[in-house]
Amino acid sequence: MVKRFLVSFATVLLLSVDGWGCAAHEPVPVGSTFASLEPELDAYVDAMAVRLARATGRHDVAASPDGAIPVYFLDGMTSVRPDTGEVVEDCGNTLWRSQDGVFVSVEIRIDPTPAPNCPPIQVTLLHEGMHGLAPDAAHADRGVFAEAAQGSRVDMPALERVCSSFECLTMTVE
Ligand SMILES: [Zn+2]
Image (tube, rainbow, N blue to C red; front, side):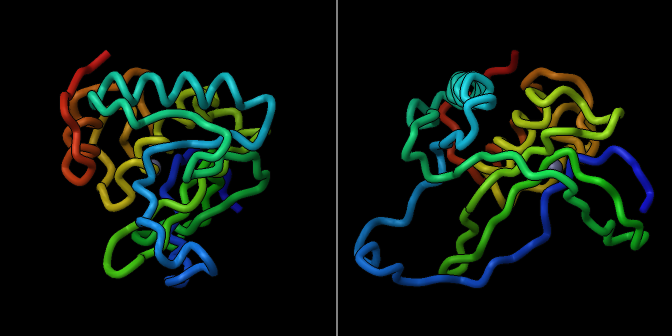
């Protein structure tokens, strides 16, 4: 396996699940809340949600124990580059599914022992949090939402992509 830095959006499409038990008549989760499942990630998830709430002007972007998108550690994640077929190690990824034609983020996984050239976990988490809000947004060509994240701040290339599918009230860079 080629060890190469990549923050990738998982191309795993989970099967559409309509009508989870009693939840069938509940509204579709808006996917703007995050739930840390790891004590070591609690502060990072809180900070990520605060930053994305400020950047988008959406005060419903928040961390909460019952948040719609769980965030947890998973080691050894890989993905295959569609262009080259190369297997690369993921620093983190976001799973989503399609529900009635709408992309819904399901969960975010962060490598607890990332490859040496992965960015800090806070940066990986910020990148994946953007996927969480906007699961159908394409990567930016530069900045923190590039396929291989550059920088650590919420930048305009990222907001342009995120806000193309997530309804931002503001676009406030850091
Ligand atoms: Zn990505």
